[in-house]
Every structure is written in structure tokens, then in C-alpha cells.
Length: 408
Image (cartoon, rainbow, N blue to C red):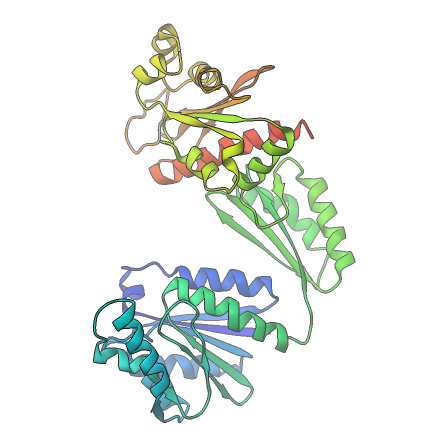
């Protein structure tokens, strides 16, 4: 199925808002075997929207998805522009207008603005697309053999409507039922993984694949018809990069770790410097983590490292706060201080300042300690502080995952 995407919004073109909708839509269409072949962003302007619709319709895609411009303010003109484009007349949905008015009066405790009346306008042709989490409903039109869905641009609302209305529509109208495998990796960048995996994937001509990199790792998604062939591809990829794979589900690595800790009947504590508690935050985002996570110490200063984690003063003076020796003592110290089976630590220079020729920005040490072994690992990231914190936390959790897997 061929899909085109039109995102509407002045704020997108000005750079005030990042167009995360386009990325999310592309990924989720790929998952159901729909191919996004064009994507355009235009301002909330009548002629720009009409021009974009004409351009996208030229190649007669199966589906056009439109997001944005359905709000209650005067600059949201997508609704009236679409009605004009498809030759529809606007009718006031009296029942929905009453629902909106009651919601404002009873739930929000304020009178509804007349601007919101536009959200109760419906076309006399086409269909309404329900909005499970907002007041701006979407629209569905058809022109020749192309179906158009128009949705609000608010990410939460758009995602809910894609999931509840458009994905089921695609599944019903896609003549070929596609299957998919997903492999989540951590530890190497997209380019390194592609070098290993692409020769395998290129053997399968009719199977679509994609690499989806982020600061957390790289997801590999392969889509095709035959489940047996997909299993074969899965096995070949697993054989090629076993040390990089942490799951073949949608779960994040912290979810996998909490399950492994519970399965192995082990507990964890963390000592964090440069990540400022990010590892603990990620672990405690997982339901059930309280049974395996004893807690963490954010040891940002040397004083806390010494007093709370029992890092030796000589270690800090001889090797520095950012060193393998300090990371190991932090891991051991937090394990003993919080009475956990495993201590995981991290110390580094997040940046963008603070680096030296010997210890540049992005230098990170991870420490691991249990009753059998204590060791450290050195890593070097870039100069972006926020990315360094995410990548450091991911690297620490990935190291922990590998240690837990030794007990499986």
C-alpha cells in the first residue's frame, strides 16, 4: 500500500516545533506493510494546502494522511480547505456541540468559546474519524481510488487516531497480509550494524527492511509475506550479532532487565555521577521494579563518593573521579551500602565543558560489582551533554544485561 503524508503547521516550518509526527507515522506505517513514498510540510494556508493535496494526489496513492490545522483557533483553516477541496458543505453537528458545551461547563468549569463551534462542523459527504483523547475529530474522504484521512496535529491525539482508525483501515484494505520481525540492539551504531546485516538482508529480494537508530540503540525491522522465511532471516541476524541483541519485542532494555533480575532472584542498586539518576529513573519506570531495585545514590560530588560510597580518598586523588578505579569502588560501595546483590555505577564527563586532553568530554566509566566480581569499562561518546547522559545510561544497562544473561 502506497501512502503520502501532509503535515500542516506554521510552527513546523519555523522550527518552533519538531515534526515528530512524521517520524512516528513513517515507523508505524512500515510496521504494517504500508510504504510512505512522499511527505510534505506546508503552512496553515489555503493555497499551500490545496497545492500540496494536488501534488500528493498526482501519483494516485492508496492513502493520504493529513495532520494539523483542525484546532479551534482562527489560523486552523484545514477543515474548511478540505471541505472545499472535496466539494463538501459544512453542517453543524448539534449533538456534538452540546457534548462539547457540557464538557466545558461540567468538567472544565468554564463556558465554551464560540471558536470551538468549528470543531462541531462536519461535512455532508465523507466520514467522521473519532478522537478518543481530544475534541478535534478527524475526517475521511475519498477521491477516485485514493482515501484521505485528516487528523489533528497534537501528537497524543494523532497517535491514538492512527492506532484506532487508520491502522485497522490499512489492515482491512491491504491485499497482502504482511508479517514482521523486530530485533532491538544496543552497543553499536547503525553503520556498523548495517555493514554486517545488509548482505544477509539483500539475499531476500521481496522483504522490506529498515534500521531505526536512536540514542538508545538500533532497531532492525524486517517485513515480508512468509513467516518461515522471516524466521530464517531472524536466525541469520541473531547468529551474526548475538552480542548486540537484547530483545525481539517492543520492550526497552530496562523492562528486560527488571524481568531478568526477578527471574534470577537478584537485586540491584545504582551509583550515578554524570547521569544524575537517569539509570534509576529508567529502572523505576518499569512496573514491578520495586521488588528488585533497592535504590540509588547520586554521587555528583567527591564528598558524596567518599562518605556515602566509601570511595577511597587516595583513589580520587590518584586516579580522579572519572576513572575505572573510582567506578569500581562506586559500584562496590553502593552494593554494600544498599544491601543489593549487584551494584552498577557510572562516572564521566558529560560536557560540553570540563574535558582535558587526558580526559575529554564524553569519557565515561561504568562499574559493575557483585559478590563474585568487580570490574569497570571505559567508553567515549561525543560532546552533547543530553545525548551523553542517555547513551551512558544505555551502555550501563546494556553491560548489566550481558552480566545477567550469563546466569541464564
